[in-house]
Amino acid sequence: MEIKDKKLSDQEFDSIRGEVLATWPTGKDVARLEDGIEYQKTMPPRKRFAAVLLKADKAKKVLLQPRAGVALVDEHIKLLRFLEADCDLLPTTIDAYTRQNRYKEAEKGIEKSLEAGHSLLNGFPAVNHGVAKCRRVIEQTKRPVEVRHGTPDARLLAEISLAAGFTSYEGGGISYNIPYTKKNSPGKVHKGLAIR
Image (cartoon, rainbow, N blue to C red; front, top):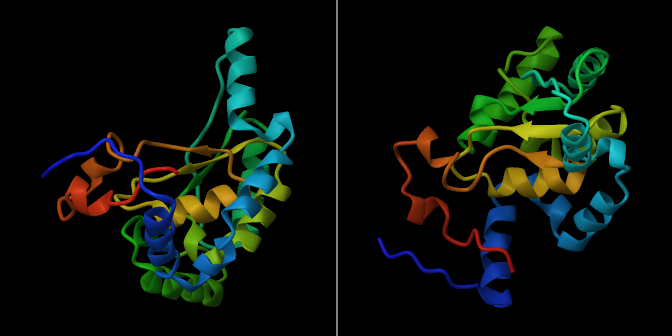
């Protein structure tokens, strides 16, 4: 495998990005990259992960963040509101189906969870919920929320969750995500991960 440190052209970036957004219907919600950027700019410092970390570092304060995530939006909001009483930073642990880009199975998990009245997934299927529902999570909590995942190809997850207002994204493109898969090589998974 040949690794290149080369910026993609805008045309290449847009082409690859379009392919990624087309992998699930909620990808259309982030067609304009600028909308997510503008929304991120509206986040107050108390809800920006980096700002809270910097303030804690200056104060030599240890912060608390659990791991948590459930299938349904209202239950996830309820869970995060409960946690924010005792935690400084909030999690959104992503479900196993989404971490493997298996959005059809995640959708079935949401449907079965709705029927059961409680989560039948082991995390929050952010891609399936899309930007608007993920923003409800952000807007109804008081603290910064981080996406916690182990997704080998997290491009669509990143697009949706960052556009929705999550202000932290656990893990790097290679150092964190590749150890979670044996089926994908870095070259296959990360084709087009460059930022323009």
